[in-house]
Length: 362
Image 1 (tube, rainbow, N blue to C red):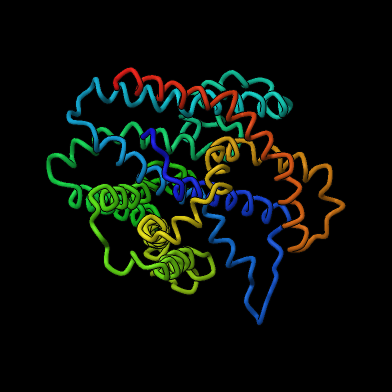
Image 2 (image 1 turned 180 degrees about the horizontal axis):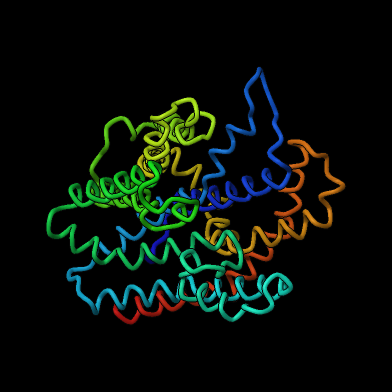
C-alpha cells in the first residue's frame, strides 16, 4: 500500500505512545491518581494495550494490500514475505544488536544464540533466546505475515465473513483451553500468534468494510468513537486480574473473551475515524501523521531510551503520577530524534524502493 492513510498513521503513534505510557507507569510501580474515587492512571492503562492496537492496524493494512492481488500461490507469498522482511528486519536487527551489546553482561556466553533466534523471529518460543522483552510483538507480527497468504486463499474459497469468523473461533477456542489450564499453560501463551490471531481478524474485517465502502451502521457517526472506547474498556476490564478473581470459576471465560472484545473496540474507534471526516482530520493531522510514520522506530527504541532516562533521572522524579508524565516528556525529547534518525537510516529506503517499483510499473 503506497498511499498512506493519515488517520491510520495517527493511530499508529497513539499505539506507540500507549506502550511508552504503560512501561513508564510500570517503572514507577503503577502509582494511582484518583479523581472522585476513580483512578485515572488505571483508565489510561487501556492506552497501554498499544501492541494490540498495532495488531488491529496491521490486519487492516494488509487486507488492503493483499486484496488487490488477483492470484494467491507460493510465488506471490514469497514476494509478500520478502517485502515484509525488507520493511521490518533492518531496523529491528540494528535495535536488537545495539540493545544486546549495551547489555552484554546479561548474556555474554550465548549472545550469538539469542541474536540468531531473534533474527528469525523465534525468540518467543526458544528457551533463553530473549534479548529485549518488547520484541515479542515483532515475532507475532511476522508469524501473522506467514499465515496471511493462507488466510487470503481461505477468503477466496469461503468468503471474508466466514474466514474471519473462523479466525475468531480459533482464537476463542484456544484461549479458553489455555485459561482453563488445558493448553500451553504459562505466560508464554500471551506471546504466540494463536493467542493474538483474532486481533488481526478485526483489522481484516475493518479493511474489508473500508475497501468495499460498506457502511457499518452507527459507527460512521463522530460520537461512535466513544462507543468503541466503552467496548474496548469493557474488554480490558474483563481480563483485569481483580475482575477475573471475582468471577471465580467463570474467570477463565472472561480472560479469554476480554482481549478480543477490547480489540473489537479498537477496530470500532479506528473505523469511526476512517468514516467520519471530522475525526479523520483530527487523527490524520500533519503532526500525528508525521509521528505515525516513525512509529515503528519509536516502538523499537522506546524501552531503551526509557531505561537510560529512568536510570539517570528517575531518582530525581516524584514517585507519583506526575513523575510518570515528566519522565515520558523527558523520554520523548530523546526518543523522537532517535526514531527519526532510525527511520531515515533503516526504513525510508523501503518506501523509496516501493515508489520506484510503482513508477516502473506505471
